[in-house]
Image 1 (cartoon, rainbow, N blue to C red):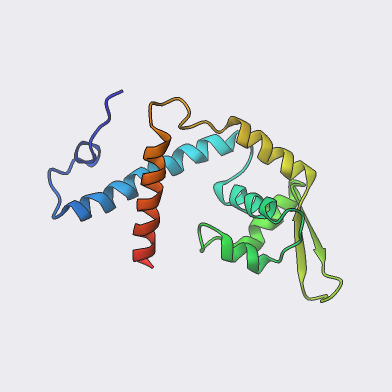
Image 2 (cartoon, rainbow, N blue to C red):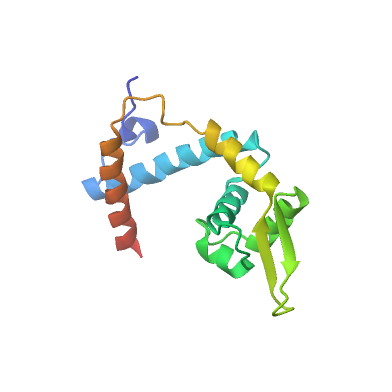
Length: 153
C-alpha cells in the first residue's frame, strides 16, 4: 500500500517548518483514526467517550468511583461525564449508587455487561494487526508522542 503524503492529503505544497508539518500531520491523522474508531464502536452501540468511561471503570478493578474521577481521566476533558454515565446506565453497562459514607456522593461501577462489552471490543479491535509495522517502531513513536504532548501542556 502506498501512503499519501500529508501534502497530497490536504493539498498543501509546503509548510513553514518541519515542526508545523508534523503538527498538521498529527491532527489530520488523529481525525482519520477518530473517524475509524467511531465507525468501529458504532457496531457496539458506543461512542468513543462512552468507551473511554468504560475503560476507566474497568481500570478501577471493581472499586466504585465518582463522576469527578471519571472526568479527570477522560481523554476529552470537555466530555460531560455525568451525561455519559447516564447513557451507560441506561444501557446497563454501569451501575450508579449513592455512597453510604456521603449521601451527596454517587459511586459508579462497571457491570458484568460492561465488562463483556469491553472484552468483545478488545477481541475485535485489530486496526493495526494487518500491517507490516514493527512493534519497536510503535514504541519509539509512542515515546515521541508522549514528549510532544508534554511540551504542549
